[in-house]
Length: 158
Image (tube, rainbow, N blue to C red; front, top):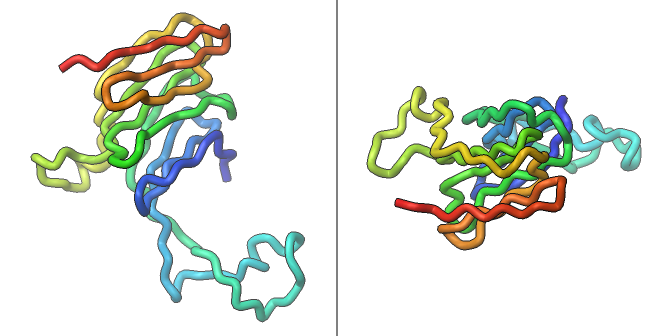
């Protein structure tokens, strides 16, 4: 199990970042057949009633990886702006920022191969310091906050 540096809901899906240079898009599976007792997962946190009706999803479906090199630190935050969650942005220790398209475009048919491709839209440079946080200001501006206290703004061009 990996440590999450950041987690974000994208509709019914979840984006989670680990310390292993990757953000994963996945879908929790919630069915009555694929559940386990909450007591089984966290026995020391709640009472020892093994007949508990508290149920938790037991599985997830992997959808896509977004890989970024030099991003093995727990506190590097990514962002996928709501309400549309069309893109994902993440920085790294070398001041690089990557922006990906989250899903296949509406113009093309979805297939398994397209879903697993990384769909990198652009790669930006925000100095030489670790990019600790990324956020979108509207649909046309990306803000990167670096460890050296610098703040970078990137404007989208068509």
